[in-house]
Amino acid sequence: MGLKDKYAIVGIGYTPQGRVPDRTSLSFHLEACVNAIADAGLRREDIDGLICYRFFPPASNEGPVTPYLVAQHLGLSPTYLSQDANCSRSHIQHAVGVLEAGLCNYVLLSYGHNAFSSDSMRRMLMERNTDDAVFGHFGAVAGYSLAAQRAMHTFRTGPETWKHIAVGQRKWANLNPVATMYDRPMTFEDYYNARWIVEPFRLFDTCLMTDGGRAIVITSAERACDLKHPPVLIMGVGQHDPSNDVHQATHLAGPTGAKKASEMALKMAGITLKEIDACEIYDCFTYTVEITLQDYGFFGPGEGEEWFRDGKIEPGGRMPVNTSGGQLSEGYYMGLTPLSEAAMQLMGRCGERQLGQTTNTKSPEIILCSDNGGILQTHSCIVLRRS
Amino acid sequence: MSEYNKPLPNINGDSREFWTGCREHELRFQKCKACGHVRWPPSIICPMCYSKETQWIVAGGKGKIYTFVVYHVAYHPGFEKDLPYVVADVELEEGPRLLTNIVGCWPDEVKCEMLVEVTWEDITEEFSLPKFRPYW
Image (tube, rainbow over all chains, first blue to last red; front, side, top):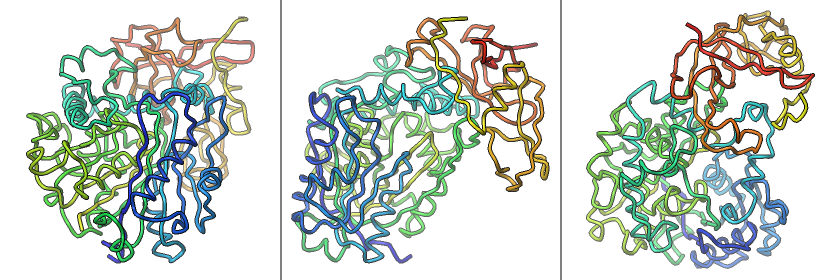
């Protein structure tokens, strides 16, 4: 396929994260973008594409964070500018698409939010726009819980499986000094003792609410060679969007969009799962990780508990998953949590949590990433490799 | 019936017939005149055959639980006193799946595939909500 290895991630931008009070969402976008541009060894004049992840209803003392605003404050006037509205996760496809079409040379992908310290998330939950709220149904925790409950009815899964994901990812976070949960170890007992949020999900089945931002820069493999870091090549991308909302969806217990999306991405990359060294999976909830890996074909329906057992995804495990701690234990940046971590690992910049000898895991050549939005309504799969 | 402090339905051109039916304790759904597909949520065009020819039918009010959750957190103050409460997706015999509440049993008695029937909650002068309870 024509796109294989033609484009690359060349820079990653971080910000302080976790609880960072009195910062606007805009400020996190800006800091992440400036850091990503510098990390790539580029200058502002080089950036000609800006793609923002969605904004949530802004905090009551802040305006909406539009891509205009981000561009304005970065002093950019790009030739491609976009932002998704409802978590339809096509950002990498947009970036690769405009690069391939010759419309841009260097594209920034950005996300920033003051989710933890502001009233933004509360406003989102209260600013209902469907009749679900009439029955007391609000937000994504309950939406994914509906999916997880159906899965528990359909095949063997539940907390016994999910505890391995929550605890395994926490172990990675404990090796990542910038992770929100760095100094908070977790046992299976801690997992079970945590309070219910929306049953079947307990507290540690749900992702963090994070103050912070993240950004990456994407360019052509050719241009990438002149930059600061070894480029991380995009081998394959695939997407599938079942789209149906949770009321009518028949994909809640799989196959979700992950199945077709991964088939497309692996085909483009010309590889099979056997060649995957690690996974960075969009993990809004523990169940999302299970159903994604199941639909990718790592194990059959109901075989998850056995597959995850004995530290499979942890430091020292045979298939490391979410090596920064992920959204459950590092920080929440939509698809940029998995993508940025995969890129950092493949560049060899992960310190104590670096895949390879340091963590007694395979040295990573190829990492499989996912992004996912709505209530399993959209799924994107991305295969990355070391150059 | 004053002091109802939970969100009320949104009435628009698509949803009006459904909520009017609820006030009269009828579950009204659109059935495509061309292909017979019973659809939900209401819309102008059949998603199966794109026909606009539609008739409203009244569902019998029986179905089974496709999936459900138990809320232990109130995201809206109106629901605090209901905790823990059950939100479920009920698959009606006519086909559509309806998001609703399960009442008339304890949350830990609720199971997927459980048989349920509609029970009406008159919340204001204008609105009644279709909720579901187990039947045997």
